[in-house]
Length: 60
Image 1 (tube, rainbow, N blue to C red):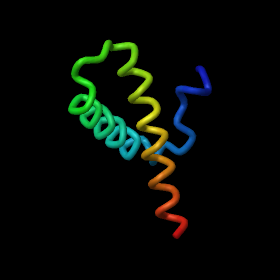
Image 2 (cartoon, rainbow, N blue to C red):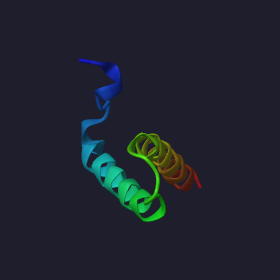
Image 3 (cartoon, one colour):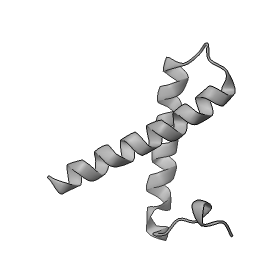
Image 4 (spheres, helix red, strand yellow):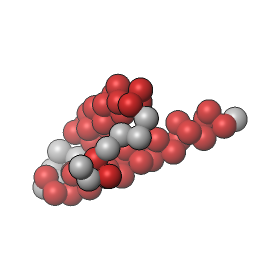
């Protein structure tokens, strides 16, 4: 199994799925005229951005 696809904290699976769906919905609203490869990379970037924001909020 590839390490990049393994969730290190199994309890986080549901939260990660929710985050993925939220990012995809947000991108679908904002990027209607872009090709699919650009959207895929944008989704990954949005997910990372949201994860960092969530973590920073927890630290405060």
